[in-house]
Length: 499
Image: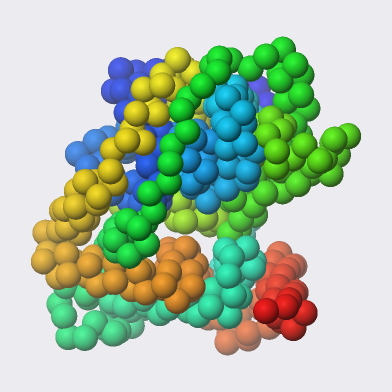
């Protein structure tokens, strides 16, 4: 504990430098704006920031991206409360009671408790990250290739049960991601694989190219098909911008419980902030002495959902930084950014690049304070962003996507791939396949393949090595069991759900 505090203080020395403070502020503002604008999520924004981040130092770039990640959780409450259009999937539960509060003239209280709960949940999750990540990284140093493959494969299987939709479609999406990760030159044999005769593909598909295409261009195409037909009416921001003493009392325990629920949910592969907010909301409804108020403007529902989705952010960073396993679409993009900077997430990260890690952790405290300072006094200013038609922003995203694709290798082939993957992402959403599962599998695919082949070679070709290793066996069993349980549940619901 003492060692962690010492490293954290050193991290604050880096986080409070002028360039890093400016990066945190820029990310906090941008993240809030992203959360306010429906359809432009943190995954898309962080992906589009990667080309810009090339000109920044690794710590400043990562600080800005994590601030965007946190800020999007804050900003999503505005559209949920005033429009009943969640800016993020994790804000769906906020819309249930938040919009009802706005109809009652209590929008100011709803947004204020959202900001306060978000700050408490976000800060709690950073404390959890600081306490749990170092011992987990130390434990992971004992992993061999078999353990790494088991952990990553089990996490990927588990994520397929939580990304939503059909498990079979999620598995198919992950399969496509794994296939795409094999494009390029085999490092062990030097043989080119699936390059279609294109020299630009000999080094494989750039993470940036896939992510910007699927999350950036794909979202724009989806907007032009769906969102342009939606013109929800915005309710006015009425009432005091501060909760009453009674509202504070009603929200205290929901915020405390939801901080823990959100942090734990963030650790689970494929769940993230969406599962966190849903779980926290229904837990509060279950323990409430007046459950009939939920759905009719209960501030406890708003506090629970917003606290939990922010508490999930710190939890999601633990498996990313300590094991190199992204558990959500946004952390997959963050992992892509780390790899672009030559930083490989995993247990060695805390020993080989501890200055960078602790600077980023310290910056999360700073970013959460900035977001609270921004979201309480400047709520009325951020509300005005809702009046900007998204159709003016979409062409800018397409332009940034093209620039980002070209910047990776100065290759027009990559620009073409960005738009090709954008079309793929659009059709995946149209047919209810999972773009998030595809990206998660792609990001983990190369390392999974290397670990698998190393483990098989070290064992003399004995495939049972993955079941004789306790860690690998447990993770693979948990992942496979969760997937089978999810498939059985989906099949049962198909049978018994009336048309």
